[in-house]
Image 1 (cartoon, helix red, strand yellow):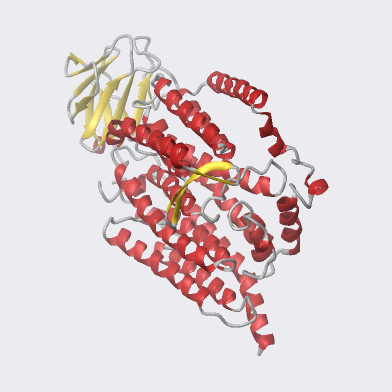
Image 2 (cartoon, rainbow, N blue to C red; image 1 turned 90 degrees about the horizontal axis):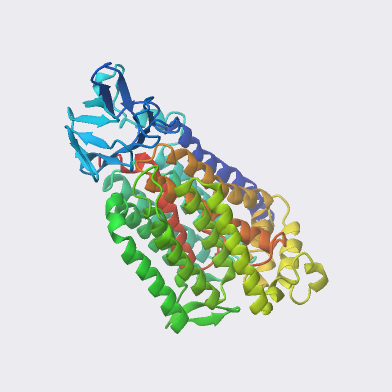
Amino acid sequence: MKDIIDIILYGIQIILPLIALLIVYNCFKSVKRSARGNTPLIALVNKVTKEKIPVLYWENSIGRSKSCDITIDSTTVSRDHAVLFRREKGWFISDTNSKTGVLVNKRRISESKQVYINDVIEIGGIEFWLKEAKVISGYKDWFSFKDKIFKNVLSPGLLLFYVSLFHVLVGIELCFSKGQFEYEPLMVAGLIVVISWMYFIINKYLFRRISFEMESLGILLSGIGIMTICGSNLNDTYNQLIAMTIGLAVFDIIILFISNPDVVMKWRIVIACGAIGLFVANIALGTIKNGSQNWIILGPVSIQPSEFVKVAFVLVGTSTLERLQTTKNLTEFIIFSGLCMVSLFIMGDFGTACIFFVTFLIVAFMRSGSVRTVILICSAAALGAMMIIKFKPYITDRFSVWRHVWEHMNDMGYQQTRVMTYSASGGLFGLGVGRGYLKNVFASTSDLIFGMLCEEWGLILALIVVFSIAMLSVYSKKVSINSRSTFYSIAACSSAGLLLFQMCLNVFGATDILPLTGVTLPFLSAGGSSMVSTWGLLAFIKAADERTYAARR
């Protein structure tokens, strides 16, 4: 009987990477098919030439420059002249500091002006009628996504079924991990399945969502992390389950909140002040753990405020951009970023500080499009780092064993050497969930969880996890092209960049490619604050997909 069970369990170990690969493939496969293409929303008709110009995006730059979405080849038109954009109330046009201005029905505008069908818009002396898209032949309702998206792609329900099957199989495997049957892991897997399907039903029928790729991927990765922790510490498992449930709720709340970018613009100062308030509370009330004062302990609950500030950082940074192709003053965001960096420096959380800095670079570059700006920022950061090392030399001690961990395998290099040793022992398919030895090393389920993946799940599944998080950047780039606003594009790309960089710090730090900084692996590492913030960041990526708000329109 034992031999039969061992064969079944080994079969599960081989099947799990295949199911995970199937899920990940179908999550990203629909991206290409979800593209709306060149179906116009409205049209601009030249009053003189009768030329019909299709308006393809929710936010369209208009100008003489070839980089504009709508190019008007006339010397009277500025390179970046205006922006025609859609909001909840309808279509608006805004002048982007052009020389000749923008006129609507013969009246020059100074701010954003709502426009209606049959209005006359004058740009550089050239008059256009605003017309419905049906004036262009071959018009089809571009909101009809369904047939195109789901052709040869798993339906949302079937995709979630495979995710549920994956977790149930892991639960069965964990039940026998200690040599005797234990029912608790299967109960944990069942709770993941129940929470997943409740979320699916609510969002499908209440919010009328038509795409669930990001949610399915997030549930898959979160479940892998929860089941890994389950094989090590059952008490932490339930905390992580609660955090995933809260994360799913935060995911939906953020999507609803940012459905109207104009509302976000109004709240950005409040959000920024709230984020700084969290850091102040952290500095005043925080508890030092592992050399960093980044925890607030409230009875049985511990909170890491810097994780929540990540979400606020993206919101504040992206909301500083009001109009496409407009050069804005970065002063507010620079001040906010500086205060965040100073707070993290005081707290001693240099890994998170690096993540914030990279996110700042992404936002700054996407706002300005200037490589020079990025170089200046990096130069200032390098100068700041040199000053820190000069006045705080003890910081360099943390990196003294980098690339020399085997010379310090019994002291400062203990964690990395064990990660590499036990990871190698896992082979392609792993020793089995809950059967590894790395779980006995400090921070195995947080900073070192990638090593546990390699040891217990196998190299194949560990690489699938890494690939999934890395592909979020590709997904963000694809969906942001047709997103409703530059706000969504920048938010998605900066969030994906943040998650990618954080993953690199965790994986490369644990394997001694980079210094060990103590940051979590998104979705997987133990820590409720990290889980909630990761789902919050995923919401920005989801919101950039124009299908997300299709039901509202």
